[in-house]
Every structure is written in structure tokens, then in C-alpha cells.
Amino acid sequence: MPDESRFEPDPDALVEPPPGLPDGWRVGTPDPDDPGDVRRLTELLRAHESAGRGWAGAGKADVLVEVSEHGLRTRQNVVVRDGAGVVRAWGSVHDRASGRMLFTHVVERGLVEQVGRACSDVLVEWAVGQAREVGAARGLEVQQIDTGAYADDERQHRWLAASGFTKVRTWWQMTRPVTPDEVGLVEDPARWERDGVVVRRVECERDGGEPIEADLRAVHDVLEAAFTDHFNSKPETFDEFLFRLRLDPGHRWDHWWLAEVDGEPAGALVGTESGSGSYVAYIGVVELARGRGVAKGLLRTVIADAAARGRDNVGLEVDADSPTGADRLYRGMGWETSYVTESWHRDVTVG
Image (cartoon, rainbow, N blue to C red):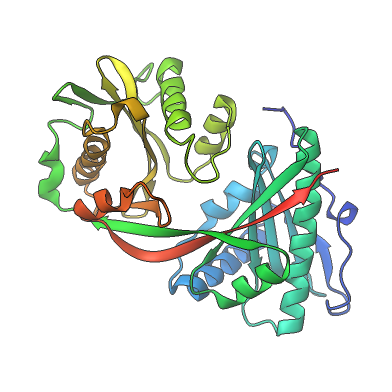
């Protein structure tokens, strides 16, 4: 992982405002130290969520992940401002892993089609330029841009398709209610053992401190191995993995668990705090340990932990197109789909 960003910080080096933008509108970057900019980006993101799925959940912390100086080590941002300097559109790119660049694409709701589409074109042109920058820095011939859309967001679908993106996957965003009595689902969320499977929190050097490196590497190795054959899996280094997850607004070291079979790491779950609930950011089981109840044990642990903390739900995401049937496990344990998202991809030739 490099010490500095692989992205081009100057948007003028990548794009020129298209004719469809009104006079006086310009392309620039957001200022993370300006409360007005952060507030405006939060407003745009929440309006985007409301239009796409019917309700907003993002807050200031979600915006700062993308625009803060710390986050810019692996991210870069662009905005379109009107003549008064108000942000009307926002794009963010994230150098997620080798060959995979995430792209956030947010255009103000209510703009007339011509102006909104012109803003969208700016964001996409800039993202394509950034894909070439980061792809070249990584020594790649092709760099993927991976962006998302809510299943019911027809405007986003229309603009992405017109800009060369293809819908490639559907995801179910699932939630399960948690009741106080479920604290007893496992003996102790910190550590329990059953039928040769041990589930424990990652071991920390001191109370509330960072976990020992051996456990962190074990979690990374398990997840890398578990997702090797999954859709769009891209290799992510240990340093990239830790840096990215530390930035998550809900990051908590005491939400990381390892499962061991015969003393060897066999499964891992990385959770976060999310509003009034917990969220399963990652859960994976290595192939040789599948069928031993490892995944179910990890899920029971995070449910019991949420109950112990007084939380009322646990959320997760599942690949609706996966042949593994993981959704059957989740539904069998009480999860139901609350909304649906999609992945849209565009491959950019770097050279």
C-alpha cells in the first residue's frame, strides 16, 4: 500500500465542463474542513438514498470517510458547483483492491434532465480518468469501475447504462430483529466452544486496544481464502484491508470474531455498529471447514452480542445471484430482505 494516493487530485486535469452545464457552473473538489460542504454532501447523499430506497440512513461520518484528509490516501472526490458555489453533484472513487475501483455517483434530485445528465457525465468522465490513473499506478491493462444503484432508482440506471456501465449483480440487503433473550444463543460472545468449533473475539494486546497482529492476519487470510471463488473477488493486501476497515464509521475491534476448527482458523466475521443495530460486514468460512456449522455459529455469536449490547437488529448483505444458497441460511435464521441494490461495472482500458 503506497504512502500517497494513486489518484489525480486536480479534476481539471481529467475533465472539462460539458456544454449541458449552465453558465457559471464549475468542477472542483469538496473541502472537508468546510462545515457547509460536509453538510451539503450529507444532504445530497441522504436525498439519493431516500429517492432510491424510500429512506435515508447516511450521516456526516459516512461523508467524512470519503472526503477527510485521512481517507484521501485511498480515495479522491469531485463536485459540480453552481454559480453560487453550491454543490449539485458529487463523485468519489476508492482504490479498493487491485483491479477494482469503487465509484460513488450522486446527483441532486430535482435537477432538470439536461442539467442532471450533464452533471452525471462529468462524474463519469472524471471516474474514467481516475481509473486510468490508478490502473497505471498498479501496472494494470484494464481497470474496473464498480458502482452501485438501488434497484428502484430508474434515473441512476438510465444514466449509468448510457455511460457504458452494465448491471452485473443484484444484492439483498437483509435485516433480522434481535430480542433481549437471544443473549443466550451462545454461552459467551467473547468465547464459546461446541462440537470441536471454537468461536472467539480476536485477542487484543490490552483492554480496548488493537488486536494482536496474528489474529488480524488470520481474519484477513480466512476472508481472502473464503471469497477466492466468489463474484468479482479481487486480491486485497493485509495493509489495504486494515486501513479500509478502520475508516468504517461503525468500526469496533470488539466486533471481530475468529472461528477455529482443530486449532486452525476456519472462519471469520467482521461486524460493525450501525445505528441501533449491528452489521455483518464480512463473514467467511474456508472450504475445508464448510458443513461444520461454522457460519451458523458466527451468526449466532453476533446476534447474541447484539442482544447483550441492547441492540434491536443485525443487518447483512447477500449476493442474490450466488449459487451457494447462502440466503437460505440467513432466511432460516430470521433474516428478511429490507431493500435491494445492484452492482454496475465498466471496464476501462488503461493504456
